[in-house]
Amino acid sequence: MNALVKKYCVSVDFPDVSGAEHLEMLQIRDEIALIELQLTAEEKKSLAGADEKLRNNALIFHQELSRFIDLKSWRKTEGIPPQRWWWFLDMFAWQSPSLLNPATPKSLPKTKIYSSSLLQKTG
Image (cartoon, rainbow, N blue to C red; front, side, top):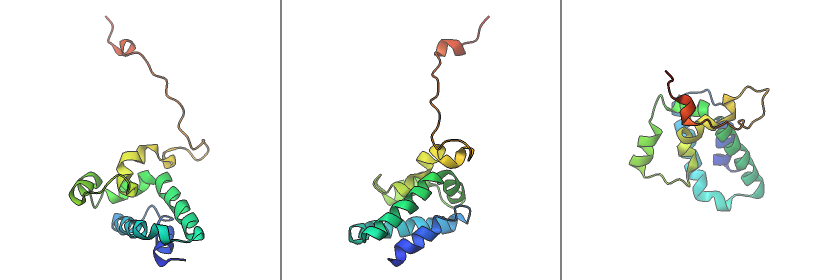
């Protein structure tokens, strides 16, 4: 297996380590993106699984990363496009299944929308 893919796959298994290590992990993911078309089917499958772990634990990864960098500022400074989604963990961390109780399904329930008139103060 490609050494970068292997290192990335191991890194996503530890969401509660230092944000500095997560920064390195995101930089490794950048390197993988450059060679992604050259990966074998097995490597692509491993990469997809690791990416899913990163997305599913976005909240935890973001909390640790935010101790070292502000992702929004970093993206602006570095000119990071949306195609490099791993740099946007702050944008979808609130959707992370890690927010949910493990006994609940991995999707958020539909929220009922209430009229703003119900929220107005009465009397």
